[in-house]
Amino acid sequence: MWNDHAKALMRQAALQAGMISPLDPPHRLLLISEPEAAALYCEKKCDQFAIGHGQKFMICDAGGGTVDLIVFEVNVGPQGRSLKEVTRGSGHSCGSVFLDERMEALLRRKFSRWKENSLTPNNWTNLMETFIHQVKPLFDGIDDQFITMPAVPGRADMTDYDIGLEDGVLTVTAEEMRREVFDPVVEDVLRLIQHQLQQTNFNCQAIFMVGGFGCSGYLHTRVRAEFGHQVGLIAIPPRAELAVVRGAALAGITPRMVAARVARRWYGVDSLMAYEPGMDAPHKQVYDREGHRRAKDRFSVYVTPGQQIGVDECISKRYVTYQYPNPVNSPLYACSSTRLPRYVDSPDVEKIGDFLIPLPFIPGALPGHKVLFELRMYFGATEIRAEAEVNGMIVSTRCQFTG
Image 1 (cartoon, rainbow, N blue to C red):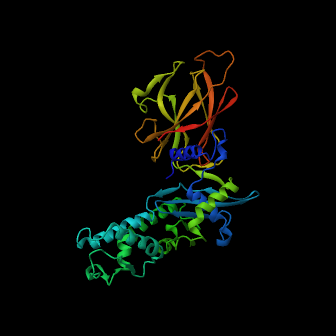
Image 2: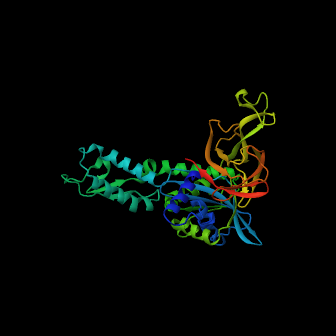
Image 3: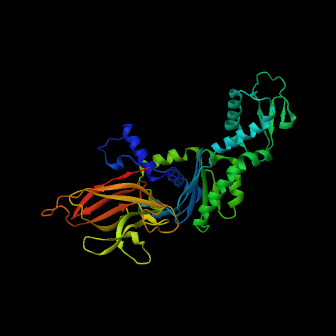
């Protein structure tokens, strides 16, 4: 759920905050996604949970706003232990804050029979704080829940049997709490886990539940009931609410722990390609400087969804420009569809940024001179980076990501 533009904004924010300076190399600041950070923390516990070489484990990072999931495979080699992504990470806005929203809606329905505005904003705050800090973390799906009502101005009688209120204590049955508050959100989490397991062909040895919501006893019970017959270990690691922050610290100590990642989308640049009658639209037909018939705006693929890419793996393609000596602007496009897009201006393709490639001085070259260059991209790290080779010279370039 963390797109390239959001990563670029985070780096820019760190720059403006003074954490790094514009002169620092990119690796001075390392970015890492939350589920990956949690995976590094859980990997340290793999010996404790008997997860060994070649085995896979899923991270279900259930926090306040989002739930993010991904599956890693453990590799033990001469250089020690490492991890590689084996699924396309997924996520959804179904964190514990949505339990809060549903609980508030339930309470408002219950008290709608009371005189309008009888409960003050402070009353609502007290009720919700009781749910958030006492009820939600301990709910097991079995026991009824009892909430002590705050004093309501102008109302001495704090009994209303129709809504389960007696002597100032509101009873919400376990069945009602499951049906109205927890289950609609938990079902979303179960669907996300099912999707990840399908990507592994149900070859996954463990699921680690981390994050604040991941520590929920009821969520853990539901996950075990749903997937316990398919996954041997479903566990909440020690101090699971701190898994992300501790894993992020580990990433700084061992930044090469993750050896490979899986692409979420198609990535490519626009390019002139050979025109294919019957396949290419007539309005895409152009002729290049050498008189060859071409199709413009073609999507030149660098990465396909589901492709596993090494952290330092370079993917390169050769191109031609006649813009010398002006810099070459090479936009980067992405697409989340299941089918390869043909053109960069297709409805499901979005431009995510621009790579500006400066052209070095070429002795004897005149303006408009034909220049061959190789555009090399690295998609295996958390952030995309690129470089170009022009006339035998390596030129670094950064992507200016757009919204």
